[in-house]
Structure formats: structure tokens, C-alpha cells
Image (tube, rainbow, N blue to C red; front, side, top):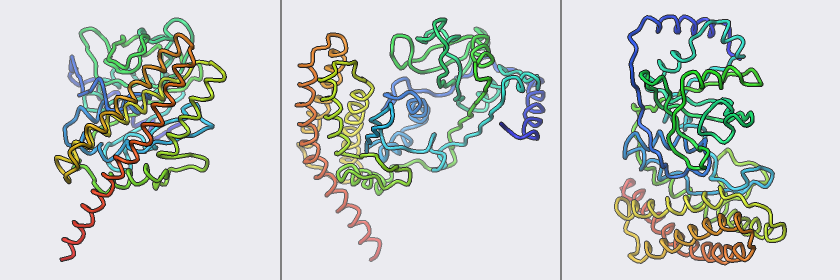
Length: 360
């Protein structure tokens, strides 16, 4: 919970904005299909970042390269962790409030106007609500489900907030809900909690691709490690994580249970991003061999086939489809080692040449 003096400041701020002229429509920049959208919470951040300039997109090329396997988590396969909204890199300015809902009501804060004012000041809103009250969500009027959300705008004419996320049709896309539905989804939360984050892109810093960071990520991936301080004991990284992906698939050949298509989507998206990253390196950093893009496109296509076979298996439960994915994944690992190690050597030489020039 926040301190009492902070609560007083929020009440004063809320009262102040009541007297300000209301903006009728506000829509912050948003990308509906970010580079990685397998997991909703990270997709929120990328939807915002990518919509704010090509320089930020190129800055992201130094990230989302390595992957990890964490057997004890539900999200067993994931990209390596970064701090939320890259606050540690000063990429965003983030504020957070946390209240008991009952306390928030006692303070007589107009939640709708408070959120709208933060949007007016270019803050994306992230938090948790009960999807039971939100149309277009699977849990709508079906069951109570506390889940994360992001709001990127509002329309005062329609009295609706603009949001993005996974909807009932299982697509990551834009959708809307009324002011009243939002308030109900917060105020009727069963755990009586209200948590809101206000995230603003920091336009005062220079976003650019960090080639040393990109090289470090590639080094980690190829050697199955993680140099970042957020690594935990028991995690497996890089190519070894992709080998664990094969073991994961094999376990479903035995059980015939439903397989998690988020993982196949994740690896497919990481391969798509890698191809774009290689094109950027070739055009802006150092020359890569000409046939590398054809070779890596084969990897991208194989990852896409695996994703399609995952979805097909979940419908038909034919384990022959999973056997096929193992063959594709083995080929991906073997091919990726060859292709990316060549890129790794060229980046290493590029960085060494730059250091030599700097010392002369």
C-alpha cells in the first residue's frame, strides 16, 4: 500500500484535474502486432515501444535473442528476462500506485478521470482487473479471472477506453470497453486490490542498437548461458533450452495431453525477429555472406511449420504430428548453430576492429 502523504497528494491531484478542460479523444501510439506477442504482458510493452519510432525498433534488435527453459514454471519456455518496461535502462518513466479498493473509494477519487488525465500526459496504463466484467475476454460473464491489461487511449464521446490484448478469439488485438465496465472490473476485484502502473516512453534518451549487447546476447545463445544478473539457478538457456524444447514435445507423445502453443509461437517469433536482425546487421553493421538469408529463412519456415503442427495436434491429437515437429526442431538447432556462429565471428571481428581503431 502507498504511504498516507502520497495518498493525500493523489487526492489533491485528482481534485485539481476536475477543473481542467477535458480532452475528448486521446490515443497513444500503439502497434497491434509487436515483434513478440506470445506472452501478453511483454507484448504490451513492445506494442508501445515499436509505435514510438524506428530508432526504438532498432534498439530492440539488441534484445529478444536468447531464450530460456524453466521447468518449475507454467511458462516453461520464454525469452530471457528484462526488467519490466526497461526502467533500468531509463527507456521509460514508470509510476505505480497500489491501494485497497475500499480506501480508494473513501478518498473519493474519480478513477475514470484519473486514468484519462494520465493518458493525456502520454502515460500508457498497465494493471490488473477482473475479466468477468470486460467484453471480448474469455472470462466475460463466465468466471472471475484477475488478469493484466493495458489501456492506450480513451474516447469521451463513446465513453470507452482503448485497450489491446488477447481476446476471446485468442488473437492479440485492439478492443474497447466502457468506462463503467472498467470501474466495475477494478472495484469488484475479489482481493480488494487496485494496482496501476503509468508508463511513459522517455523521449529524452537516445535509442540506438547496441552492437556489444547484441553480440553478448548471441554469445549467450550459442553457448547456452545468460550473462545477465537476473539468471536463476535451475534455468537452461540458448541452444540447450531449444534441446529441452524437444524433450518437452516428446513428453506429449506419451500423455497425448494438450500442448502449449504459446511456446511454438514464441520460438517462431524469435526466429522471425532474428531474420530481421540479420538484415539490419548486414545493412548497417558488417557484411554477412550472401546466402545466409536464404538459409535462415529455412529456419523461420521450419519454426512456422512447428507452430502449425502444434495447433493441428491440439485439434486431432495425432502424435505423428508431434514426431514431425521433433525432426523440424533438430534441423533448426543444427542449422542455427552453423548460420549464427558465422554471424558471431563477423560481429566479433567488427567489434575488435573498432577497438583497434579507437586505440590508434
